[in-house]
Image 1: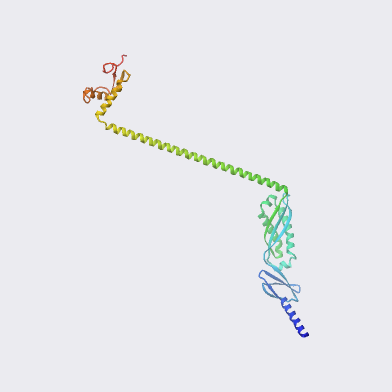
Image 2: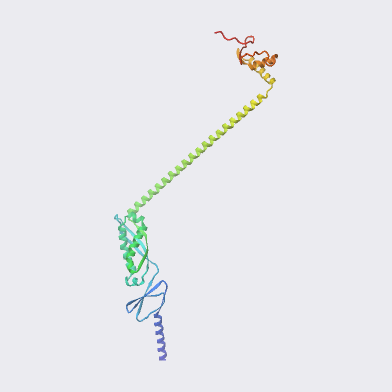
Length: 310
């Protein structure tokens, strides 16, 4: 009975020793091994066997981690007091140094970040702090990385989250923003009016051009119509026979008879037509030397009118 209990105890002790001797290290982890207080290097990933009596281990995570830095008060180059909080992203690149060179990396990094922030902000004016966050982030990352490099830690990114300027500066920024929006609205309205005026002028110009073009086409059509009418009249006139002309001469003679004038000028063609109508034949009795237009005394005997005495 006693032997059985002793055997069971030995087995349990052996199992405990075996369990303490076997370590399973993940891919993103490393084990810093100390044997009798002396650093023996890194172990892992995978299965790691240690001596539980003489060996001690410290686990190191190689994944990227972040550290939140709470609001820190800093004074800018132009003596403006501001409050800033930011985040640091870092990862361990040398597990041995991260264990041997620094006791508490998180606390050390937080204090270094606060002092580095004051140094960086002190070299910048307030406007640059508010508008040039990327430059400030880069400056913080470089300076922090210079300090943490000796700890085997790499600062990958620094991101400023919030900047709280003084109340007076906030009020001035609000007024400036309102004035800028008003300016943009005025410029936009002026540009709209300009475009509207240009569009209206273009429309008026096009309307005037179309009106002038229409008038020109109408004038051309009227001229063509008048020319066609004249051509028609001339064509009809050329087709008239002698009897028609004699009828026209008699109509003219009737109009001359009712005229109140006592002296008229009669063309030779009309006299020849009248004489022919009265029986003289075509051109009979018309002297060859008669001028193209002869003044006739209507009040006398029908002969040629005598010229007035000088």
